[in-house]
Length: 521
Image (cartoon, rainbow, N blue to C red; front, side, top):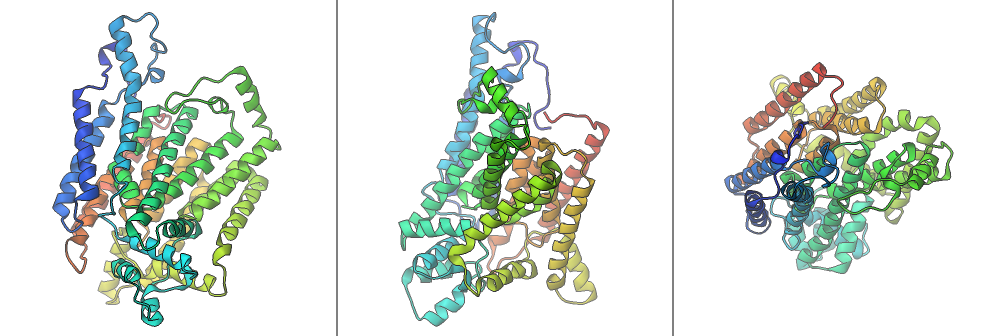
């Protein structure tokens, strides 16, 4: 684990926030400022140097961050300690809060910047503009629209030339489209204004996710400092808040859904009383009595929690489709009756969200967009690139049209196999289910962009696995692709990325097999 279990017998081991830590935070501040406002994606060496610096600071902050008062036996209060020891302990308790606030400040730095490492925001603005203009973004191919409409509106021309896939229908689900439409409505024909609105929603989602993660860690009796794995991770900060990827909002809805599921099926001690952002209060007798009601299978409270969890899960899927891989793991945890009701609410809510876009062409055209994703797009793949290489050697052409859908089917079968083999059906293990399912999906995918790894980083907060953190470092190598036009992937860097990640994964699995009862600390 990144945070190893240690015993602190004296306050000699307690290190408050010092000048060195403040110096690292200042360097990180400048690094994120540089990425947000001055970096050019084509200058890979510049980006890599800055990213490596940020990641080194991230690891150092994780290493130096020490246990809060709740994590250290014998230091529940400052009573009986010397003035010096008490001062150190109080400073220590504020250490976690300062670092979480630093993570939030790093995200806020990007507020008025235009994404420097991604051009997806052009499509966001295009889809939003189409909807506010009375068009259905799901039925429009930008290239065809520009050719057939005869409209040469300067703003649309700029968006069209900035897009990376103008020949395809949009693939973004309805929650994403609502966000794009809201941004375009508030700032018509204003790209920076559109970007700011979308970023504000991403920032709010990120802050809420960090908040909820602390509550979940508290329930699982895990150190609250584990939240720093996500809150300070440079990939999460640059890709979600900086590059405006909606995984930020998807993760937020997903965490809410899981949090409500945990509340609906467990005796939650700390969650019935209001508590501060950083310092949850201990439960009262009333809270404990109320929480017992949550365990009643037909309790109205349980039904409400499951209902709102299903709505939140539907919103996560309606932002990005990837959470769908988690649904099979709910059957054992909720049992058939409650899981079927959960799936029904999720499905109905998902369909309702599509109502503003419904027409005869929607299903065919959006379905074709999903199919094209698996049959045409290739980037930073692992197993698929090996299969493609074999295809070139044997049949002399790119076999993505066959291999893409086939590997998607293998992913589905593998996840069902994981569901069948799963013996530990605790909610803590649910995060491992998400982690392994997503890992399988990414390893078998034809396209793996850096922001896809952010959900894995989220899982590591609970599971304690290191390989998502390692992956969040080495996936930065993929930006070497954009040094030239046309773009050209450096396959030896892709190989390096996956060799290191696979090596780390195998090492961790071997270590854990030796200690099957090891707790995540």
